[in-house]
Length: 267
Image (cartoon, rainbow, N blue to C red; front, side, top):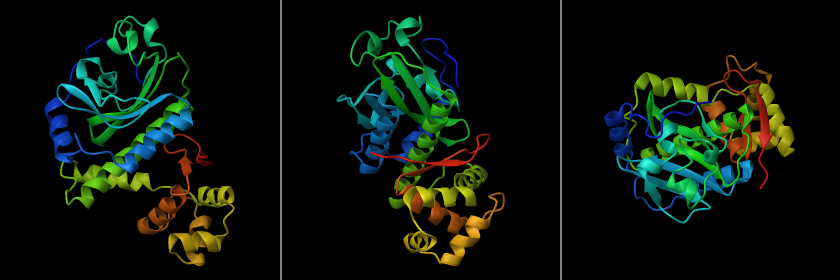
């Protein structure tokens, strides 16, 4: 988790970051149900009044999706997300009013009266963060490492949606390094057989039901569930299974250093 810095942080790799942002053609676009759902889910999971998908242009912070706010954005110099885009980790302010760097910020002293902030960067290429998925409370609060990991995973889902939108509109991922695309794509679908079995149990699905929903054979599901996760089945097979289960609100936990697990999000 990132530490607090000065009130106006330096703008690292700003020209590259802005070029990537503008290439995505997301700024000032109409509301999108996919992004709205992620913001709503973040609001529900963390029990906060405000959740935002924020993009940082040169002089403004613009909200691609928002829950609990009516304004379309803020001046960039007021944006807490200025700090989030400096880090790969989640940036957390437990109590803005108690910290000298934020206590006089207009977003703290006035609407929306921010006390707690946590933001996960939207990283589209190495060292290139175009915005954040952030949650805000009007009361100070603690935020655990597990909470931070969940928010970071949800931010990766936002990035996935950004690329799906880009592909659907005929764009490509030219602002990404090809090696990084390959690496992050592979990482994003690594789930274990144990996780697949656990996800089925949460949904009360049989192997046949998962096979039907994913468009795969029951024997394929059996092979995946027998795998230890280190050398999973084909990329395409794992992707189909993962997307099928995530569409039913299953969240896969425990990448990198955390223990693998699953969680079912209930609305």
